[in-house]
Length: 299
Image 1 (cartoon, one colour):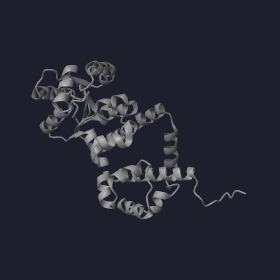
Image 2 (cartoon, rainbow, N blue to C red):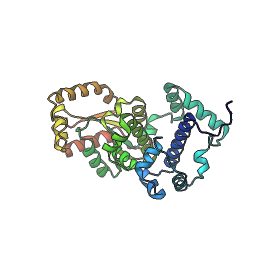
Image 3 (cartoon, rainbow, N blue to C red):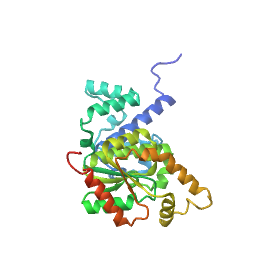
Image 4 (cartoon, helix red, strand yellow):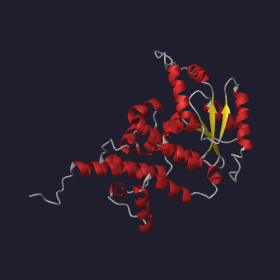
């Protein structure tokens, strides 16, 4: 006879506990604005182990879990409890939002956003485009010239995970990286009121993340010719685009054609083809000023 109160933890219950623990630790760390590297230093648990733990891939001892809980200023029971007490209405609304279809979630966010969408984007500028267009160079120069922070989204992901991007991709895969990318965008949106951001070229192919980017940032498509894209990437020391792949240029042209309609959703464009960095910087600052991207009113 099966005992309904069997104390043994079956595989399903164990998986739920692991997933719940991963979610609680990740949410608590982000709510406190702690990069994973800092949580590692506070708890004595390695960044790689914390990454696996937040991904639901690591088993943790009670002793180590206690260290993590203390570093997050939480009781260990709050990390393990099946339910965390919430205001009744808040909990109900949160549950309904999580269960809603993506288009419904978009409408809810739109209702909660300011009536003038420019207000939400005011002061924040994001540079879009394929690698080699000049986003990092121009972003850094523009940040210095305008006296505002410049951030690369991938650098923030590396800082948060405590590992280089190559290891991030190896550990999480492309789907995991896209989740980290979305988290990083949300984190940066909350952290900075005025800034220049540069993002990876593929972010436009992830509809929910791109929609949030367009909602939170004024956007500029930094573009150039396929030949200059390839030349600049090679000048950075990366020979992979051409090495052993004679069709690389054709593939690059196809990728540009496929993504052009997505990049064209940006509010402005600048062309860096055959332009010195300082000349392109002047173009970018002119676009930012002309469109009032840094104005407090967002218009």
